[in-house]
Image (cartoon, rainbow, N blue to C red):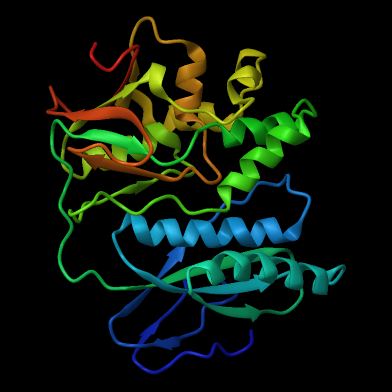
Length: 300
């Protein structure tokens, strides 16, 4: 891997081979590895770069940190190697350039495709506030991207559905609640249900999700009604187990939408005030052990 051009300060080691080399960062800047999943369905390599950049920015925002740059390590096959490098780099630069963020881009030896990412952000000056009972949950992005990916693999999705999702996914969601430094939860492989439960568990609370308020990408619900269910729904249901309860009257499609993994799922915020995004639930005091409940309606 080529040497990253980084100033002096402290040392950090990547968790992902083959890029486990020490680098030096300025004081006050922390580097955090990003677990990235990218949809195997895009037609242009630039899209991979754009989605990767958005994921890094939102990861910093969920922790109420100010991103200053992104470090990327790329390993790719010999065939089309330069195309991979140029395409992914253009996508990264497109998004990061809009926010004035620096890009440190390293290329390793030839091999199976591997993209490792780390976001560089200013360290938090003080601890974040934990969510509180009674606060509502605000989601910054629609759900159902993994449903569209599954539809793509079954050759039943439309080009317009994919294009609309991807075009709107290359813009990071809004920053956190105004005037308060609270912890957010990035929606990803664990789906909305897992992200909501993770946020609730940080404060030992219950979370209730409003099945009728869950926003979906165009085409996602139609595919679920047609039986296009991604494997992530079943996997996340097993992982959450009895921590995720679906009440009587909730449709199976709503439960699947809450459980499905998200490629660019945005951020889930807890706030007492109206925030940007869609209100999808509320935090409550737990009856026993903290759980996530999917209700037919929030007031139920």
